[in-house]
Length: 225
Image 1 (cartoon, rainbow, N blue to C red):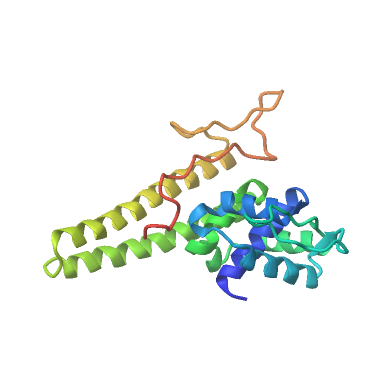
Image 2 (cartoon, rainbow, N blue to C red; image 1 turned 30 degrees about the vertical axis):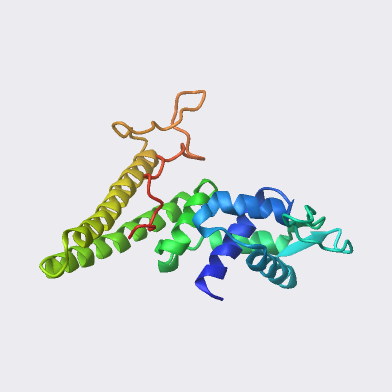
């Protein structure tokens, strides 16, 4: 399975974990989740859905209804509604628990982060720390590249390189804030300028969840690097 198709599978299973939906609505939700610059066409989405159905991860409701994709000309929508099977729920939980190197990469990190609200805290920490480590390696390479090529490029090319460098530096700072917040929530401390640990009715820190993390920087993770 290609990296891109793996991202799409994860995103589809995650969205359908919340509620069943038909392909048209699913595509809209995917574009919101992954960003318009990664917009998926029906030619990409429906083979993924059919493959997940074939693997037993999805179930089609009203499968006997003839499928007609929505287009600007016919205005019709598919009447097939997709929902997770028990095996699909298990597959989503398996992907959710993955904190290995693939989860740190540009293609996967954004999707993992989108489902952090359903992810175990220990897994969140490993993904965040792995992503930070990966970007710190990238920063070192970028700085070395700028130092070596400074005399060979014009001012505009150098500015473009510096812009990419600053984008990665900004994401590293954002990750540092997220990691510190996760650690503080685990220990019950309050991060200066960050969200406090939610309190239960008896005044004790809540252990079964965590507050919403700080919002990501303006640039989407990994987009400019």
